[in-house]
Length: 521
Image (cartoon, rainbow, N blue to C red):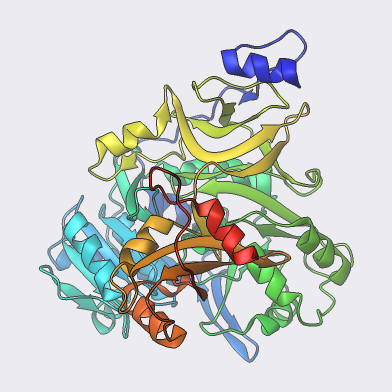
């Protein structure tokens, strides 16, 4: 291992230890001209009466055929055009957990517009920052979803739902490299960053079909997430529709205790969720699930304990894990029939160029720890952070996009996750910057200083904890209420700890590891 580390330090390969590098030639480019929404719905045109989407609950389901879904999408595109929007315009989506979300998203793409999906949990102040940064040409707002006053038209649900039956707009085709959509991700800088993706991003997801999903046209994929989560949008909707499969989404407000029943009742063949959802389901007895072929997990590292408990509860059910991030679609995974070793994420998918890099941007030898990186030629990689070329450039080491996550590549090519290289937190599958949370909490009433960290509170469970300095103990309920006014629920601390002083080094820099030690003490 010392020889491996020495080789890694100098960025060279030894005769006996190959580099942590996966490159089997890349992936063919998408056809041109191209439209992402057209690509997603093309396979379903061969089976127009097949159910594309069912919004399921124990008492029944709301069903959408491929014909009805495609009509609603293309009618929405017509409505957006008639509202005065033109290709390239940005449309901010402030929609709830309903079928309106994917229809509006694909409708905007069909018209050549740039949709920006956002979580309905965001507060008005958080959305105000996005509006200032993006300058959207319009906002689609669902009933009851927070949105501040805006300098652009705000289109309500009654209006955009009426567009479903309008004449179908033509697909706006163009260069696959052109801007398609924008998603927000928490950044280490302390503010969410808008990540710009091209239309060709959907093309890259084809590598997941064999490399992770083993997805087939006859499959029925139940995703436990909300419509307005990007994990659901991709894995639960876009990918099944791309090959003509059926997507099943639980109705808003579904209790985790009911998910096992929904899997059985609606004969799901694939179940997808964040690891935390599997944990919640396992609190309750599970029905026999004879139709379920396997399950999918992403968003945070899956623990071996949850994997084992799921297999025991389901009679051998397999959870296939994957790794990706907002800046690049999932590119490391373990498909059914090729299960990864304990602690491993899986293998780089065929067609991906993946490396583990040292501090100089060179691949480390296998067996040595490095930072996960994906090549800039990957079709699933972002165009960049919107209007932030310097921030974008800072994420690259030569031709490699550097994720910030550390891992070790085993001799057989499997990648074992080794944790974050920074202080980013994970809240239910969402990456959250501690700096963003601390900035929002910096003016809490009665608090002099505050710092946050992700803390493991028991096996497989971690939460965001706030540590604060104040002259007197504060009412935690009041602190939580102030936090809820400023931050989306998933960003809010779940516990508050008063301390005499925050741990800092001699130069005054906050020591987050010290926060974890304070909590343990």
